[in-house]
Structure formats: structure tokens, C-alpha cells
Length: 560
Image (cartoon, rainbow, N blue to C red; front, side, top):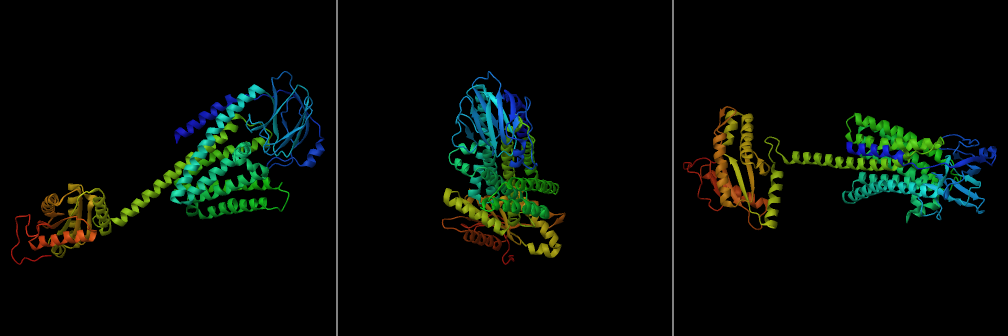
């Protein structure tokens, strides 16, 4: 995470050195009277009517209306460049050429050798140029550039922007594949939100209309950009709700985010798509107001969720706040008629890539958290609460898996059925608390001394089974003898009370066609043979009449 921050800061520090933009305009004069511009309703984002005074030699921004530009003489292969035209339509009349040229970022006939971050008009001479601007919502930066210099700068633009686009696109498609397999909604919301954020950025830069397939969006014009941005905001709202668990941690604030960000933006998007009202000039101001309000409420909600221990809200804040700052800064600078500095122009796509990567890391952490919770729940469901070893369901599942491996890989499987001798007398004489301590002592002996804790299970009462994968029956019998000897020695006294715990053990070996039930039944049968022989011994299923311990019980000894 820290390396990602340092890489981003290094990139932003280097960006100011990449600016090769020049002005090369001696004078800008307004032709259209100011009153006509006021009637046209020049607006800039959330700001009220904006006036553009006559420029003179110091002003390099122009708004809606007609202008007369005088390029500085002597510029090599001059190009008249309008940066970040967004929805503006620009018509240029070069007296040396004599034919008006009208262009916007939606035009299909833009010169393919340049990117669409600007509208480029080659000039034929040093004479005055007449410009008409229509539909501009932000003041346009205008400059006369040397053709070779602009080509170098534009190549830098492409080289800097394309890798960021590739990062966002690649990560989003990878997460979309996760959704296709896992079918968890948060992955689909992530992919949708990031892809529509990327599409909105590409439409704003104009690059989307040069891509195969996406060029169809040009027919929607500015409304396509507005609709894409609104849909991206709606998807982000639902992503934050699911990703950071806001409904659970801060339900009231989450409801407010959903109402304003999802329902409010959804209603404006519906009105944008409907044929009525026909005039859509109201949409950007309303959409921007909802965007600001949604982000403010979401920011407060995420901070509250983070303070309440929701760690994934912190991922959202780390990823999203830089993108929000860049987006708002860019909009404010354009609205104020200020130029987009290189750190802002190129920082935005890279911050979007940073957002995509951090959120993807958060998804991985979220998946890891859910897996740990699942494993804890599974372990709790499979473990015996008293002894900590596997319960009946857990050990039967392990044995079933071992039988599957035997059938598939030919790995031998043996089973020891362990029953403590005369355990009822321990409970009757010393109480159930000491009896429970004896059970824990027995499981401790088997688990720690023989390192088979994950293969030992308690069927109930004082009955245990031990699954021995990769062990043939003779070796299982010898292993059972060692287990019995350890129990006899280490459990003779428990918590300072002499109890003399011993065990009768039956050993069975898996055969073709065996099931969990049949294998346990044969081992249980061998165990009862050991008890009938006097207990404290091991009996294999292949030699039920031959006890493995030299001590024999007298005739008629009770069996329990």
C-alpha cells in the first residue's frame, strides 16, 4: 500500500516537467456583443452566468460567442488548439483557407494522428482567425502550437494515459471473472462501477469516440456523457453499501446515501432518457448538485463505519478520497477558467487506476476475512466442545475423505476404535468434572504425543476413533498398543487423583466397498472383543481371539 502511494506521488511530481504547451496568441477580441452571450446563457457547472471580458494579450480563455484571434507570427506549422472542449462546438474560419471548419469531440472526422483531449485546427498563415464557440459549459483554453511540439506533447499524453486505462480495465475484467464464478454481487458492482467510471473519463476526454464499438456513443452527444457519469455514481453508491457493509454498521446514514445517491440520481437519469422535457439544459446542474450531496453523505457514512470498526470502509476511504479530490479540483478549475495543469490532467486517470487497485486489494482482504470466518464456523461445527477434537460429524467427514483417497490413490486406511475401560466408575466415584478432565487428558495424550490431532474424533461419551491414513492393519495394531501404553502411563493420575485410566482398542482396515459406517462397525466389533478379553489391550479385526496385551481378565469379568 505504501509503495502505491509513493509511486503515485512520484508520478505527480514529474508531471509538471512534461508541459510543453505554448500560447502564441498576440490578441483575442470578442466579435459577438456581450449582451448576446448573456442571452445564450453561458454557464459553467454549478456557477451562475459567466462573463468573458475582452482578452487583450493576457487572456487565453474564451467562452460561447464569436472571437477574433491573432496568432503570433513565425510559429512553425501552426495549430490552433482548444483544450478540454468537453461539450463545446467550435467553428474556425482561417482567412488564408477561406472554408469554415466545425468540430467537437463527437465528430467522426477528427484528425486521427492526434488524441481527442483537444480540438486541433491546422492554420495556413499568420493572419487573423475567426472562432465561434457554442455549447461550452466551461471556458476553453485556446493556444497556437507548433505542429512538431504539439505532436510530442500529444504522444506523451497517450503514453501516460493508456497504461492507467489498461490497469483499470484489466483489474475490472479480472474481478468480473470472479463474479462469473462466485456470483457475489459485490464483484459485479465493483466491475460495473469501475468500468463506467473509466467510460465516463474516456467520454469526457473524447477518447471513447475513437474506439471501435464505443464510437456509437457519439450519437448521444453530451447526454451520453451525463448519463454515463450518473450511472457510474449510482453503481458506486451500491458498491459502497455492499463493500463496506454500511447497511449493517450505519443503517440510517446508509439509507440516506441510497435515497440521495441511488434514487435521486436514478430519477434524474430517467428524466434524461425520457423525451420529455425536451430541453435537457437543466440536467448538469441538478446532477452535479446530487453528486456533491451524495459524496458528502457517503464520506460521513464511511468515516462513521470506519470508526465503528468496519475495516473495509477504510479501504474505500483510502481509494476513493483521492479520486474525489481530483475530480472536484478538475471541475472547479475548469469552471473558474483556469488551465488544467499536467498533474491534474494526467493525475486523474492514474488516481482512478489507484482506486481500482486499492479496492481490488480490499476485495481480496474481504474474501480472506470471509474465508477465515467460514473456517472458524466450520471448525466450531466440527469440534467437540469438551475435548476440542473432532466431533462425530467431523471425524466421519475426515474418514469419508480418507476412503475416497484410498479408492482414488490406493492409499491404505486403518481405524482405531478407542473406548475407556470402567469410565462410568470414574464418574460415579469422583464426579463428572474429573471424568471430563480424564477425557481431555486422553485426547491430549493422543494428539500431542502422536501428532494426530486432526484425525482424532469423539463419537460420544468415552468413545474415540483415530483415522490412520497410509497405515496397514499390522502397523495400526502396533500403533494402538503404543496408544494404550501411553494412556495407561500418562493417565494413571489426573489432577492429582489416581484414576488408573486404561483403554480397549479395536483396529480395522478399509476394504474395497467399505463405507464410513461399515469400517467403524468392524473396528467397534474388534474393540468389544478387547473388552471381553479383559480390556486394556488392542485387538485387530483379523485376529479377534488373540489379545496383544499379556494381562488377561479373569473369567466372568464385567465388560463396560
